[in-house]
Image (cartoon, rainbow, N blue to C red; front, side, top):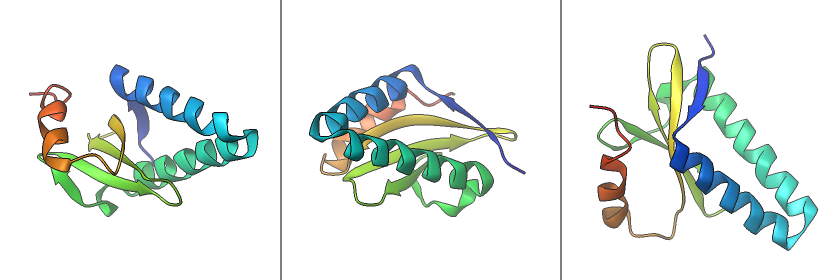
Length: 104
């Protein structure tokens, strides 16, 4: 079963900022970044438990060739992208940021 994909508002803003950054290098780099995001999201939607748990209920999927991780939560019929962040950021600092994005 392929789940629907939703974005937390902040995650959507992060995706847009990252896309602008990669499109700033070149159209080809930006297009490849978007293609990679779509490929990873399709895999996560089809096989949501295939990515390791990162923090509480958030799972972490890495975007190959980019220093970006995609964090998502799994529900019965959907996944929600909670964040898209640069992998170079301190994971401990990120955890407090994500608390506000997790549903109780």
